[in-house]
Image (cartoon, rainbow, N blue to C red; front, side, top):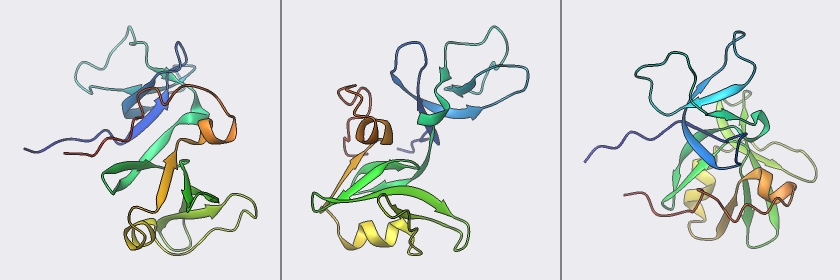
Length: 143
């Protein structure tokens, strides 16, 4: 069975819940929004305004987990990296959180090479210590 996976996610402004869908920004509307269904896209707008600093783009699925830009990946419990796009190599790579150095190896090459030896956390939970109890971001294997 084919599945369409929403390419973006962000935390809804109204309640902090994760929402998944398509990114929508307009000078006619004051907030960045995630639209779940592109059908019937018209006012009044559904309650999908999201906090811009939580918006992430789907990078891929590794070890059955969805990885988005801005996620924090921890290797072996203490090496922390942020998922970023590196235009110099045209790929999503890892940025070391302490030094700010951006790697040049595509993230898929790294995560596939160390399968099972990494942890994933949305950036707002790891850096700001917001206790959302992983609302809507459980890392269940993708079928």
